Every structure is written in C-alpha cells, then in structure tokens.
Image 1 (cartoon, rainbow, N blue to C red):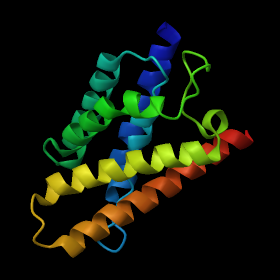
Image 2: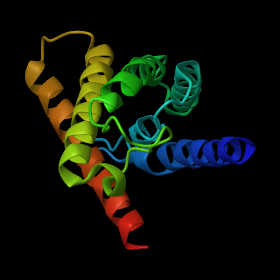
Image 3: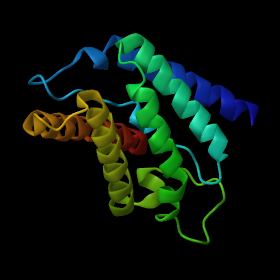
Length: 167
C-alpha cells in the first residue's frame, strides 16, 4: 500500500510538472491544448477507494489550476471524471478478473481500452471547455477546442500506452 502511494505521488508530481512546464504552453491553431493529465485519473485500478480517486483528482486539478491560472476549471472537471471513472471502468472489466485490475491496453485489449479512454477524454474536454467558455455563443470555437484537445490528448495517451507495451 505504501509503495503504491509513493508511486502515485511520484506520478502526480510528474503530471503536474509536465503539464505546467511543457504541455500547458502548447496551443495548436489557438484551440488544441494537450491535456495529458487526464490519463492520471483514468489509471486508477478496480476497487480503488472512491474517496481516494476523488481526492487525488481534485488535488491534481487544484495544482494545475494554480499553475495555469484557470481558477477551478481543472479541479471541477477532474472531480467529475473521478466520480464517473470507477463505475464506467466496471463496464469494461470481465466479472472474473482480478480485484486490482488496472486499465491499460495490455489488460483490457485494444478495442475495450479505446472505448474506455476515448469516452473519458471526450467527456473531460466537454466539461472543461464548457466551463471555460461558459457560453455556447461561439460554438465553433468551443467545438474546435473540444475536438482538437481531445485528439491531441488521445494521441499522447495511446503513444504512452504503446510505449508501455514495448518495454
């Protein structure tokens, strides 16, 4: 339990630093920003305490909001995703699987993992950009931000997962 906590804390710091220093400064075509930190929330194993997922996600969002000057956007969006993640992940897990199954390309298979991660990232981007714009007046810009950010985030996540498979 302590080793898992230390690993998760290490990944927490890595995601905050990578997003704050590198990825948060990328704005492709003024609409697509990689939001790779969503991957942290999607990687909680089966039967992880729900309060733990909510706490980790809220703290990650709070740290990212602090560094990126987006008051409450990432914290609120990540908390919503964290509330959904355990229940949504159960849809893709076979009943006879191990209790601490982690969502990964190698454990779920390509098709199930793709469905799982695509919906989670799209939902996060929808919530994040809906809160950021807080209006649908310029819905084309909103749709471009959601689609572009989701696409670049998914590309990074699948690249990371494939790299994990190959090592």
